[in-house]
Image (cartoon, rainbow, N blue to C red):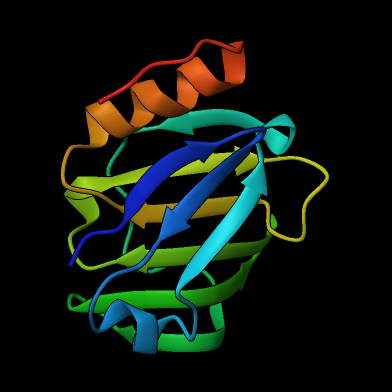
Length: 121
């Protein structure tokens, strides 16, 4: 499964699809663009942090909230090579890690939103 990332006004909206709505206990998450510090397309490690809520089966799925040395992070991961990691400030979570179909395109959408540029797909 993969999620989608869209820009809605001054917010990034992360929508979860299929079984991930059950695994994450959410349909979507909205984050103010002003809270986004950076985005990365680097591979995500399977083992990091302790699960606070959600579903975790190493090598299969990592969905939900996890706590690690940096604070709270939200994951929606089935394939760690297809994820973007969004670093946040002034937010409950320090990071959102979400799987998408095309991580480079998703990262470009986020980077353009941070810089105030509008793009369409």
